[in-house]
Structures are given as structure tokens and as C-alpha cells.
Length: 222
Image 1 (cartoon, rainbow, N blue to C red):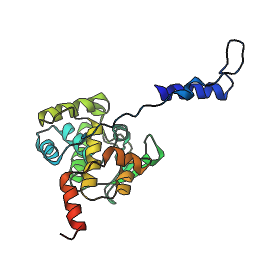
Image 2: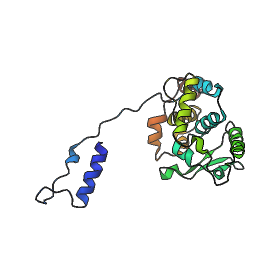
Image 3: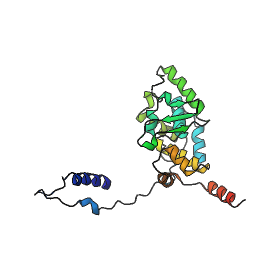
Image 4: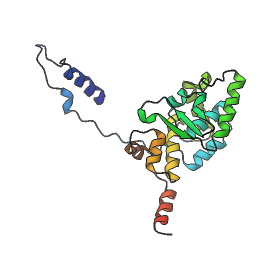
């Protein structure tokens, strides 16, 4: 709210609209406001046991594909909705993100081995439904909007995952699994489409105890 107010009053001040009843310029009242520090929610990613439980949970075709797509690419839900069939490059092994909320969001994400068969299965589903098109949406109309949220909540409950399973929670899981798997911070930041590594470090760089132990022992030669 404070940021929004600052933007409004900055606009008014810039264009000479911030005046009193007599038309005289007045000081921007939001300059004295301080934005409070808001603690980032921690532990908002699935640990290996939770991720494995999710993978082993029986799912429908729609559910299985959505979980795999978001869990193995770290896509924002808006980016996933914007994907076209032609954005999947099987030959070179990339998912090309051409629509995102930031310039850094325009990127290419490698297709891991676990996702490739899910993508092939899904394209066959689209063909059976009669909605397959090279330039058409990858996600069919059945799960493009709020249905995606409902799918993940239902699957998360079935897997026994504490708290609500959301697209962003799967995105954080992707980033955290990369970091705990040894990927450099800069690489993870690029794959997630963050504007800077600081965002990645602040929100995703919570390392597991196993990772800390492994890296510490490796650094000490034991």
C-alpha cells in the first residue's frame, strides 16, 4: 500500500498536480513513510520425501502433466498458460518461454529426462481431444485458468502434503532442488527468470542440511 501511495504522489508531484486548495505546490507526504520489512515465508518448498510422495500419487492425465510441467521447469503459472506447442523444442531439448512478466523471464529452460515422456504423452492427449495445433496453447482450455489451482490443491491433499500445493510452491521446489543439487546461484536465477541473483538468494537459497554437510566435507577433503 505504501509503495502504491508513493507512486501516486510521485506522479502528482511530477506533473504539478500536488497542490493545496489555493493551487500552491505542497510537499509529497509519502516521503516520510517507511516501508516495513516483510519477512519472507520460509520452508515453502517440498522436501525430497514430499516431492517423491507427490510423484507417486495416482493422478489423472491432466494432473500428472501439470505437476510435471511446473515441477520440472519452475515456470510461473502465467508463463505456463502462455506456452504454445511450438515452444517445446524436442530436438534441442528446450522449453522456450516467450511471454513473461519481466524481460529476464524471456528464457529457455532445458527439458529434463523426467519431463520428456510427460510432454509426449500430453501432445497425444491434445491430438485425441482434437485441440492439437503447432501454434495452439500447450495447456488445453480445461486447465488454463483457476482449474490449474484446483488441480494442484487436490493432488497435494491426496499426497498428504502439509499446506496448500500451489504453482509457486512447485516453482520454489524446482529452484531449491537445483540449488541443493549443486547448481550455481547464477544458473538457478537465470532458469527462474529472476531480475537478479539477490531475489533468488533471498527466496530460494535455503539449503538442506545434507547439502551443507556434503559441501563442507568436500571443501575439507573428507
